[in-house]
Each structure stands twice: as C-alpha cells, then as structure tokens.
Length: 117
Image 1 (cartoon, rainbow, N blue to C red):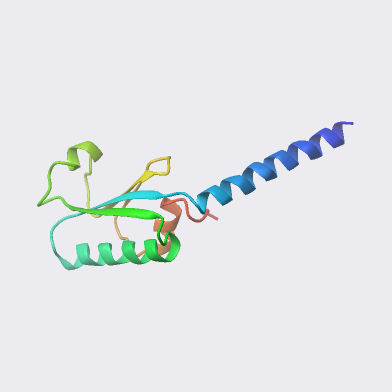
Image 2: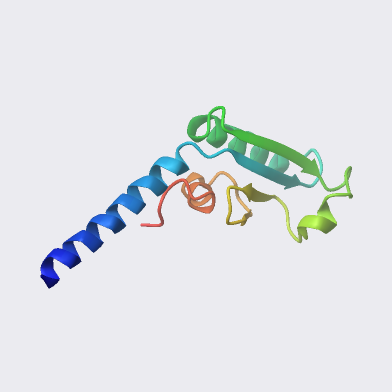
C-alpha cells in the first residue's frame, strides 16, 4: 500500500515538473538591460542579450535598454549599482544578471532558461 502511494506521489511531482517546463516555454519575458554610455562594452552587452533573446525567447520577450547616463528615472526603482545589469522582471521570480553578458550559459541560467547543472 505504501509503495503505491509513493509511486502516485512521484507521478504527481513529475506531472508538476512537466507542466512547469511547458509553462517556461510559453512565458512572456520582460527584461531591462542597464548600460553606461555608448562604449564597446555596452554595445557588446546589448548585442549579446538581443542574440540570446532571439535564439531562446523569439517573439516572447520585451527588452528595454536603459543608458544610465541618459535616463535616470528608472535606475532608482531597480537599484542598479553596476553595469551592465540585466533584470528579468517577468516571469517571476525577479532575477539580476550583473557583468559580462557574453557568458551565454550564465545569462541563460540567470533567466531560468536552463538549469544550473
């Protein structure tokens, strides 16, 4: 009797996991990328994030690029202390990826698009 209950419980967990994976493939992402000026590092960050979004989130994302030198209205809301910083607003949970956006695996993990393993 206990074995049957345990097997049913494992089946429930597997079904929840499968549903979460399916939902992740259909979620709409709202992202903000903070940069500092029009320099090579900022340009590389923008290009890298756009490339990742097109490859993994094609048609399912909004990317707002904010230059902290030009737009100081949003920085206090998001409390950005270093640039470049990519903030995943939606889907929850909120995530921040700070630093080198060319490290594709790190960005994908930060956006919850791949697991950490």
